[in-house]
Length: 67
Image (cartoon, rainbow, N blue to C red):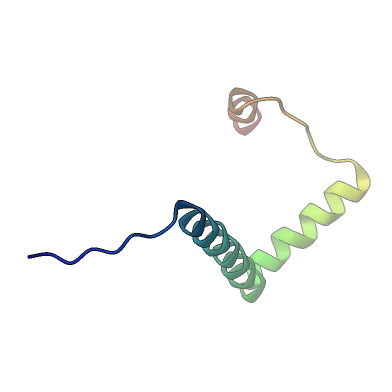
């Protein structure tokens, strides 16, 4: 016979959201610990300050920029 436990849906949603937040923090820390990652961040900051970036509306525009 299998045991089961009922978990409120709201609790599951909250747990999922918080886990996603933790994953974002870990990804940020990983990028900051990587020398090349820091270079990419600094370059992106410079590009943003100088206006050297493109705004796209959908993924097809990103693909065109990457070509």
